[in-house]
Image (cartoon, rainbow, N blue to C red; front, side, top):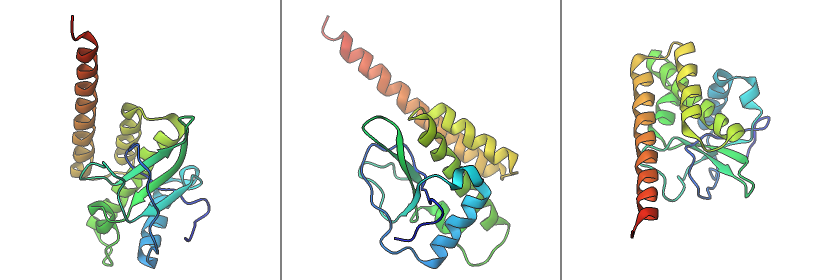
Length: 172
């Protein structure tokens, strides 16, 4: 496996093991390197890898994830090289659409870097991601897509918490 000065990967906080891409292509490495440049030097120093297989139980639109140690600290970030956004950012013809996809890919890395440093809480990770997109003049469509993803994730968390509370109250 090739590594970039500590290369890292991004992803949703999926509590599952993952594996790195078997042999990433030069285009995949170039795409990841370009996204890391956009994400910033401090983030590029994190342990990031490409993964060609999503972790078990990942949501259908997974783009990246963070793996945690037993102590709850982030150990590694994975970027899913088979995601739609990664494929868009990897297109050989560089144009506005490709650049916007690259910004979105970098924002996924920013999101996962937040998890790596701060834990599994989604509100802060999505806030960092959306702020990155806005600061880098991402398209309204990409910002809206991340906002919708945030809303779905937070609604699912609220629903799970409500179900957990209800199960604690049953039977009475």
